[in-house]
Length: 113
Image (tube, rainbow, N blue to C red):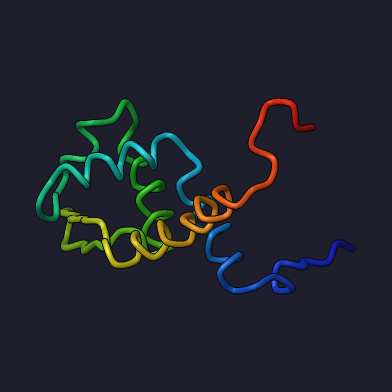
């Protein structure tokens, strides 16, 4: 039986891995780009901008919403979504640690490894 060792890692490492998993599909990146281009929540326009079926887009929206990257409301058949910039910026800050680490890396040349 496999043991899930995820909880043995630091909270910021788990959060960053969950974020990376949530944006690991090109459709989710495209959805975030569509949402970022609008100044407010958008309703129903997401499907029109993607080469995917409504059900597929809904599944990707569900994944982004589960991680907290987007906020949304569903009223009847109308769904409205927007990026939660506070959450998004927290994840970007987690990725920023790699930029800081790369500045101090002793191996920055092609001859390494």
